[in-house]
Amino acid sequence: GESVGLHLPTLSVQEGDNSIINCAYSNSASDYFIWYKQESGKGPQFIIDIRSNMDKRQGQRVTVLLNKTVKHLSLQIAATQPGDSAVYFCAENMSAGGSYIPTFGRGTSLIVHP
Amino acid sequence: GAGVSQSPSNKVTEKGKDVELRCDPISGHTALYWYRQSLGQGLEFLIYFQGNSAPDKSGLPSDRFSAERTGGSVSTLTIQRTQQEDSAVYLCASSPRGSGRGGTGYEQYFGPGTRLTVT
Image (cartoon, rainbow over all chains, first blue to last red; front, side):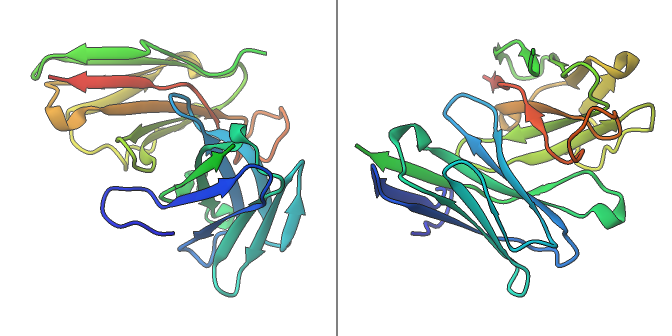
């Protein structure tokens, strides 16, 4: 659940469970979204992306869902593994404005218990 | 192929000193970004370079921060007269935007970061 203050929201799951990480984005004009995974001591790593003309996209063990009506993005991880433990960030981009500077969400810490 | 590299990986400096952080982007990537990440926080945008265009400096927190990108490749982020609140991990990312090397141009490839500690 959500935490306040300086702590990141945290999701704790058991190995093998499915995980759902949520993100609320701010700009209704954003049309391209990316999920990144950041492991401890490393830079963020691209996981999956989705354009605003889609509402679902699947990758390997991951699915991204986009609900433009409520400006909500989610990342689903199937059969979560300990190696999935990391901080997950969503990023929104607005191509129409010609800006390639994404806006990153605050991040969610996923903890997978073996 | 080689990813984005950054150096040094760790830097400890005394308050008031200047520091330079280096980023080597992926070869051929035309876009380069600097971010700052404080402990347990998200990514704070600092500056964006795209090809030979003037950089977008809108995220730099003060005039003590500056960055250069030479020859459209290597970039250096300089922090003058460092303060304790500058302590953070500084991340560099590059993107293939406009390079003709595929991708949407929006996805970013991050380096491992430089952890800066100002004492």
